[in-house]
Image (tube, rainbow, N blue to C red):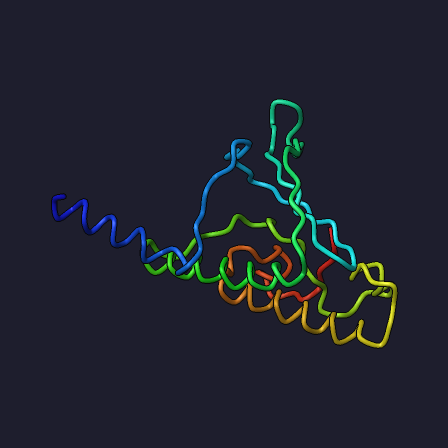
Length: 161
């Protein structure tokens, strides 16, 4: 085995957790998605993947795959996705987001906060809203190009889409 092949083999084994063997099943498929829709329940989160199909309409998404994850797996996935993005941006630079890709979270909680959050209503709604707004502000700080026009011009009035 030459040195390049040996290095590639070493890098490949370093990426896989010890003791875990990954084998693709017969029905494994590899699909592309540029859109993800979420369906949330008390037990899990379903991610529904799709692709924009502009041959049908400018904002038409054809959904093709759904995958349900337990909430524990969602937490682990968030960590792993952030790690992958951090690694990618360290190698290739910041990933720029198109303007308008994220619906704004208004600076003032909406009247119907439970509908906004998708909850049944409760004491934790205001705290959840504040945390959601904080996440949104962190996204804007790291990606100023994604801010709605009103926020880019200094006005803090924004509405949900």
